[in-house]
Picture 1 (spheres, rainbow, N blue to C red):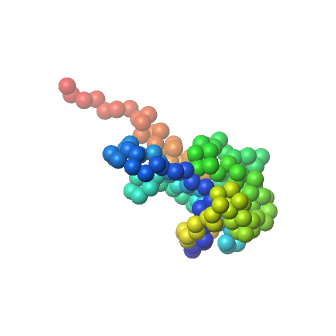
Picture 2: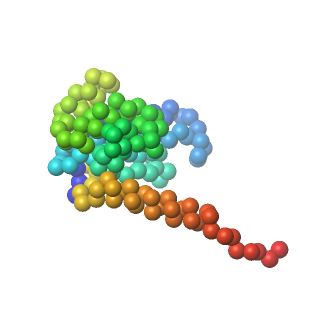
Picture 3: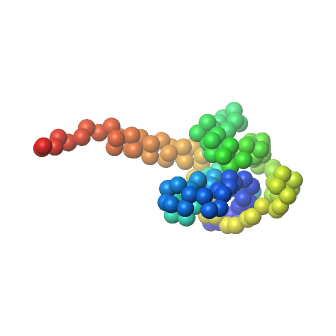
Length: 154
């Protein structure tokens, strides 16, 4: 299943800077979809094969209090997306923010209509399930580094 996403915030990487691999700054992007029955936020960092990202229900990035989860704060700040948090809060609470409202706010802030494109969504996966998957990955990664190292013959 795919939904239409609006690219509402992104950092810029100055053209021509750091032409060697590993020296270019990574763009941060925040996109939002309200085109279907459920609202989503797409977060990405980097571009091309150096990029990573995902599509999540809007409440995945929010604390139960409605504030931005601390782990996403730097991403939102780098992308210039902190202005989206009240809209995400409204979407998580009631789902009543229109695409037109988001486009108008982006146009007011940036002077252009945001780009849009389709991204795949996982409609049956909740924010809690995404958090459980994240914890499992973090635990598996920690276990790899905390595991005793085999003795080597020197």
